[in-house]
Image (tube, rainbow, N blue to C red; front, side, top):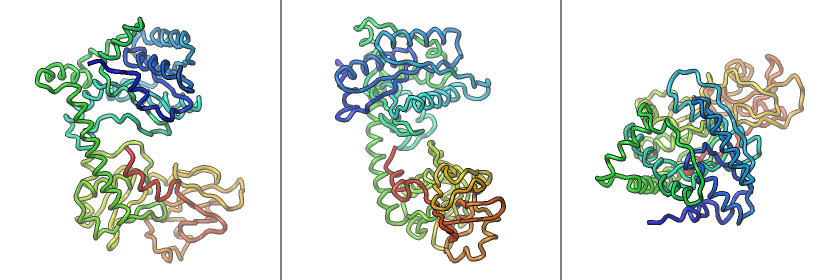
Length: 415
């Protein structure tokens, strides 16, 4: 069956393509094909292309390969930069460290070039290998949806427009164009999980468990995930609210929810509070729910959850904000905007903490638990508390969490 690669690109970009797209190009067949397919698209649409190569510095040929990508981009008239990783300390999981570094370097490059969209060359084969790796870890519905074709993370929209195309499709396209690509020898290194999964697929394919079948599983699971997320969203709208940067839920209803619905609501609360781009693992979240049912509580992902009478509270863990300070013009803890009062160079924003509560004998009149208030921002002049808007001391100041309730509930419907 012939795959129309151009249509796959258009499907993910039309009818409103972004004005500029960054392309991560390693020089391998997948990313080189993506580069040329987007070049074709940009000839017919008002889109500026920029390319970046991450040189991980792990192989002697990496620098020459990055130079070869730069030369090809120059032929196509596409601006190109190389970013080099120098942070490998030879500890831990090399592939994970390299992947994390790659995304961080690409994010920095995109921000430097004011790019809000970056395209990645992941394929149907990558999707199948990802599913097998997640199966081996006992993943649930969300994990078995595989990689998303569009995801917002680190302030960037990451596009994977070729998840419906195989590596063979892309190499056939490059061959037809007369374009060479680079074969990374690490793709045959059996020390890496992904390579072992690739070899396992060769054995499973005669049984019908191939990239196309696993890609269909990912699609089916994505529809199941969307249905579960919608149900969790409806329940959250009914029983949850934000309160001084924390999340408050009606425990009497929450405890009766199906486990999966309860887990999703708690995950959205944790993500909204912590600001983390990564979802906590399933086991610790379910373990926290069991602790709550037993009448205690616990911490996950930098957040503290506990029961207070008939309410379930989820708030920032004090340890995570104890030493966080900034000026009154900056975003505190990555989520709080404090503004409205007079600007003075000797003022700073820091957690209210126990010291702040001690300067507010009437804080209980707010009806908010002390555990919630002490992780809210206060405006300080040295050791003197000037304002604590969430705790009732305004003095002309106000404090708001970026996005508010809308961002809390939207987290249930974003992937």
